[in-house]
Image: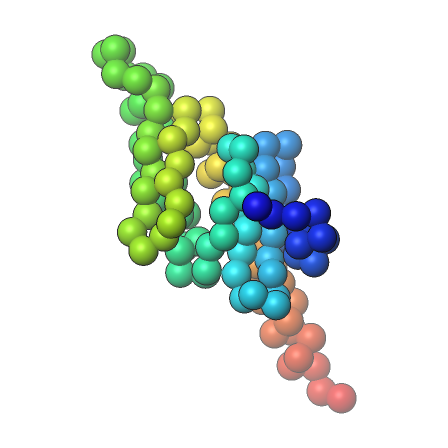
Length: 119
Protein backbone atom coordinates (compact mmCIF):
# COMPACT_ATOMS: atom_id res chain seq x y z
CA UNK A 1 0.00 0.00 0.00
CA UNK A 2 1.30 3.45 -0.96
CA UNK A 3 1.39 5.96 1.92
CA UNK A 4 0.97 9.73 1.83
CA UNK A 5 4.56 10.12 3.04
CA UNK A 6 5.83 8.20 0.01
CA UNK A 7 3.77 10.30 -2.40
CA UNK A 8 5.13 13.50 -0.82
CA UNK A 9 8.66 12.35 -1.76
CA UNK A 10 7.77 11.99 -5.44
CA UNK A 11 7.93 14.70 -8.09
CA UNK A 12 4.73 15.39 -9.98
CA UNK A 13 5.63 15.03 -13.68
CA UNK A 14 2.20 15.55 -15.24
CA UNK A 15 -1.42 15.54 -14.04
CA UNK A 16 -4.86 15.55 -15.56
CA UNK A 17 -8.26 15.35 -13.90
CA UNK A 18 -8.12 11.54 -14.26
CA UNK A 19 -4.61 10.74 -13.07
CA UNK A 20 -1.06 11.71 -12.26
CA UNK A 21 2.40 10.43 -13.09
CA UNK A 22 5.09 10.90 -10.47
CA UNK A 23 8.84 10.45 -10.65
CA UNK A 24 10.83 9.00 -7.75
CA UNK A 25 14.49 9.97 -8.01
CA UNK A 26 15.38 7.86 -4.98
CA UNK A 27 13.94 4.69 -6.54
CA UNK A 28 14.70 5.67 -10.16
CA UNK A 29 11.17 4.87 -11.29
CA UNK A 30 7.79 6.37 -12.12
CA UNK A 31 4.45 5.89 -10.40
CA UNK A 32 1.26 6.02 -12.46
CA UNK A 33 -1.80 6.96 -10.40
CA UNK A 34 -4.65 6.05 -12.71
CA UNK A 35 -7.91 4.06 -12.72
CA UNK A 36 -7.97 3.65 -8.96
CA UNK A 37 -4.48 2.26 -8.48
CA UNK A 38 -0.91 3.45 -8.17
CA UNK A 39 1.48 1.34 -10.25
CA UNK A 40 5.28 1.46 -10.23
CA UNK A 41 7.12 1.42 -13.58
CA UNK A 42 10.76 1.61 -14.55
CA UNK A 43 11.47 3.70 -17.66
CA UNK A 44 11.49 0.70 -20.00
CA UNK A 45 8.07 -0.45 -18.79
CA UNK A 46 6.69 3.11 -18.97
CA UNK A 47 7.74 3.17 -22.63
CA UNK A 48 6.02 -0.19 -23.16
CA UNK A 49 2.85 1.14 -21.54
CA UNK A 50 2.91 4.17 -23.85
CA UNK A 51 3.44 1.94 -26.89
CA UNK A 52 0.56 -0.35 -25.86
CA UNK A 53 -1.84 2.56 -25.36
CA UNK A 54 -0.81 4.27 -28.60
CA UNK A 55 -1.29 0.98 -30.48
CA UNK A 56 -5.03 0.86 -29.63
CA UNK A 57 -7.15 2.05 -32.55
CA UNK A 58 -9.66 4.17 -30.64
CA UNK A 59 -11.42 5.45 -33.76
CA UNK A 60 -12.04 1.89 -34.97
CA UNK A 61 -13.35 0.85 -31.56
CA UNK A 62 -15.72 3.82 -31.41
CA UNK A 63 -17.06 3.19 -34.92
CA UNK A 64 -17.39 -0.56 -34.41
CA UNK A 65 -21.11 -1.47 -34.44
CA UNK A 66 -20.75 -5.05 -33.20
CA UNK A 67 -21.72 -6.02 -29.69
CA UNK A 68 -18.12 -6.45 -28.59
CA UNK A 69 -17.41 -4.99 -25.16
CA UNK A 70 -15.98 -1.48 -25.16
CA UNK A 71 -12.99 -2.38 -22.99
CA UNK A 72 -9.36 -3.09 -23.68
CA UNK A 73 -6.97 -5.14 -21.61
CA UNK A 74 -3.50 -3.65 -21.47
CA UNK A 75 -0.93 -6.18 -20.32
CA UNK A 76 2.74 -5.40 -20.58
CA UNK A 77 5.35 -8.16 -20.67
CA UNK A 78 7.96 -7.92 -17.90
CA UNK A 79 5.67 -5.65 -15.85
CA UNK A 80 3.51 -6.55 -12.90
CA UNK A 81 0.56 -4.44 -13.92
CA UNK A 82 -2.51 -4.98 -16.06
CA UNK A 83 -5.22 -2.48 -16.92
CA UNK A 84 -8.79 -3.23 -17.98
CA UNK A 85 -10.01 0.09 -19.33
CA UNK A 86 -13.03 1.51 -21.10
CA UNK A 87 -12.50 3.55 -24.26
CA UNK A 88 -12.88 6.80 -22.32
CA UNK A 89 -10.26 5.64 -19.82
CA UNK A 90 -7.91 4.73 -22.68
CA UNK A 91 -8.29 8.23 -24.12
CA UNK A 92 -7.59 9.70 -20.66
CA UNK A 93 -4.53 7.45 -20.15
CA UNK A 94 -3.23 8.39 -23.59
CA UNK A 95 -3.56 12.08 -22.72
CA UNK A 96 -1.75 11.48 -19.42
CA UNK A 97 1.12 9.62 -21.11
CA UNK A 98 1.44 12.18 -23.92
CA UNK A 99 1.72 15.02 -21.42
CA UNK A 100 4.21 13.09 -19.32
CA UNK A 101 6.56 12.39 -22.21
CA UNK A 102 6.31 16.01 -23.40
CA UNK A 103 7.32 17.17 -19.89
CA UNK A 104 10.20 14.67 -19.78
CA UNK A 105 11.45 15.84 -23.18
CA UNK A 106 11.11 19.49 -22.16
CA UNK A 107 13.08 18.79 -18.98
CA UNK A 108 15.79 17.09 -21.06
CA UNK A 109 15.99 20.05 -23.48
CA UNK A 110 16.21 22.57 -20.63
CA UNK A 111 18.90 20.55 -18.89
CA UNK A 112 20.95 20.34 -22.10
CA UNK A 113 20.62 24.09 -22.76
CA UNK A 114 21.48 25.10 -19.20
CA UNK A 115 24.46 22.75 -18.97
CA UNK A 116 25.87 23.96 -22.30
CA UNK A 117 26.02 27.61 -21.22
CA UNK A 118 29.68 28.60 -20.72
CA UNK A 119 30.51 29.82 -17.26
